[in-house]
View (cartoon, rainbow, N blue to C red):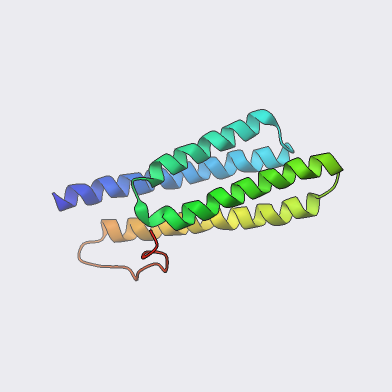
Length: 132
């Protein structure tokens, strides 16, 4: 029974990694297109998929919250910069922070996958384990 749960958990984490790649690609496209509505909708849909998958992996809670906040911050700055015809440097800086949030979720997924697929071995706890 426990092995079956570990296998299912590993499958969710692998799906998360693939979804993170899709999300980052669609998010990058939306930034490059400077707030193209279609690109933004794809990125938002990919983020929704990530949030749905993350519900099955509570250890990702803090990292997903950070990612969602970064997503919103970048989009908010894009809207503001469109209104004042400036802000490319700010958008790039927030985009780097956003990419860092995506990378942290990926790293967390890889660590969880390693724990779920190893037999009798335990990786050191992540600092946010007690939060989620």
